Length: 382
Image 1: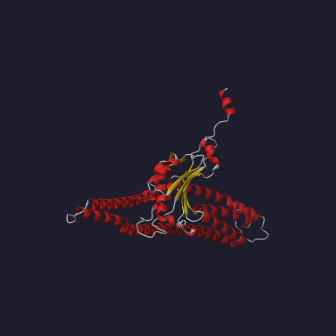
Image 2 (image 1 turned 120 degrees about the vertical axis):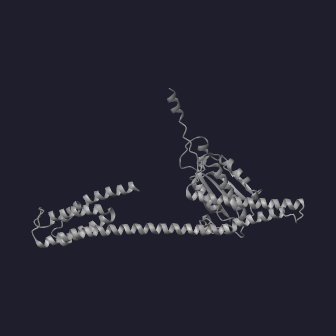
Image 3 (image 1 turned 90 degrees about the vertical axis):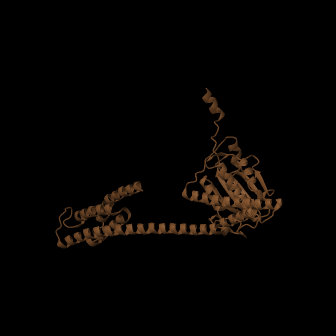
C-alpha cells in the first residue's frame, strides 16, 4: 500500500507539472476565440481533474503553476507577471482562491468516498461472516448434535444394567455408535478444514503424484459405493500430476461419496490429459509444458441438477437435492473445490450426456523438459 501511494504521488506531481503547460500551448492557439473567463474556466476543469485523480498536493502545485502561466500568457500585459487592469486582478485572485478551494473540496470528497467504500466493504464482509456464523450454528444445532446423541444413546444402553442384551444386540449398538462417531468426526473435520481454507492456514504439499494410484485409494475410501464404481484410465496411461496426494484422494472420495448418495446407478471415473494428444509426449518425456492439465471426471447417471444450480452446490451449508438430514452440513463440495483450488487446480460441474452429473477435477500436469535432439547430443559429445 505505501508503494502504491508513493507511485500515485509521483505520478500526480508529474501530471501537475506537465498538464498546465500542455493546456497553455493549446489555449494560446485559441486566444482569438476565447476570452479570459473562458480560459480560466478551462484551467479550473483541468485542476479539478488533477485533484480528483492525483490528490491535494499535486492539485496545489498545479494551481500555483497554472496561475503563473495564466498571468504570463493571457493577462495584459502579455509575457510579464504584471497585471495592468483591475478587473484582471480580481479575475486572477478569484481563480487562485477557487482553484485552492476546489482542490481541497475534491480531495475531501475523494477521502469521504474511499471511507464510505471501505465501510461498505467491511459491512459486506461482516454480513457474510454473520450469515456463515448463523449457518454454522444451525448446522451445529442439528447435524453435529444428531450423531452425538445417537452415539450417546447407544453407549448409554450398553452401559445400563437394566437391559439384558444379547451378543448380537450389543454388536448392533456398538456398530451404531461407531457409525455415529465416524460421521461426527467427518463433520468436525470438514468444519475445521473449511475454516483453515478460508483463513489461508491450510497449505497443500504439492509434489509429483501418480493419479492412477490415487484414484483406487479414493474409491476404497467410500464403502457405500462398493461395486458401483469403475475406473478407466487413458489407454496410453495418465501422466503424473502436481498435487497433494492426500488432499486429492480426499477430494475424489468426497465426489464419489456425493455421487453415491444421489444415485443408485453406476459411477465412472475417467482420467487423462485435457489434451489427449499430449499424453504420449509427456509420458515419453517430450514437449512438456506448464499449461498441461490432468483431468479426472467423476461421472454419475442419476437425476442430475439444473444448469442454473451448478454453482450453487459449491456454497457452504447447501444440501441441494438431499431428501434427509443425514447428508452432513453441506460442506462437502465447497470443501472439495477449495482443496482443488488450493492445489492450483479447478473443480467444475457438467451435465452427463443422457442424464446425470459429472464433476471434473483438473490439476496441473508435471511438465517434463523436452529431450535434446540426437544431433545436439552428438554435437555436445564432440
